[in-house]
Length: 268
Image (cartoon, rainbow, N blue to C red):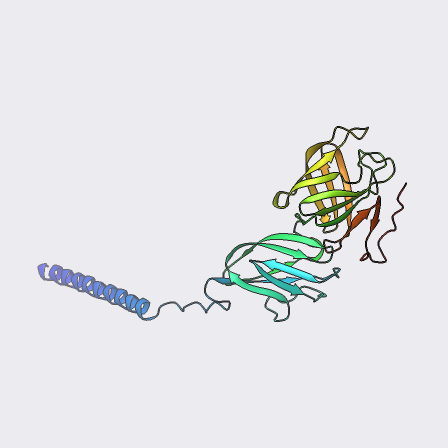
């Protein structure tokens, strides 16, 4: 009886011993496998270490040459796509940059659109700027000549002309009955990054002038509204900053006016 008990105890010890050996062997094999077979390294970044890519496209005609500015770099875009291109196509306007957040400004002859974009490392981002979808107009230079297209709070002032240059917007033509005489400095202290300006207001008799802080909203590069305490007043740019206008004897003269410029009838 004692012999049988010893034999069973011996068998149990053998089983425990073999089990322990087997566990140690499996663990050792697993460790060796992990050590000798590391996970594969990621593929190299196709855009360079820490970089991503952005590709610009449009699916509609936009008047004038298109200029795209991002990170102090300027691109041009001449292609109109039928549908979105592959992001890595070699013929679209595109740029490789360090991953991060960027401001984008896109301009045409009258088109103006801005975007805030994030470029992700190892990724290519498509930006469709057709109709400024997903973007915002922002603010633009006032340089040039602006035509007031509605009276607003001022009777008879539709047709007023303001020439903005060197930081001042001077009245160079006033319609009959409008209370802003030629020579008035209508706009001053323009702040581009805030789209704010000081706009001259006059009372119903034309006197007591005072400047009011007003915001500017652009619809495109050549169309805006002045929104101040006196009301909302629309203007259209009819001449750009390169055209020189001068006034003489209550009239306007300019040898560089093109055929599309409206002939102004000046009241005596």
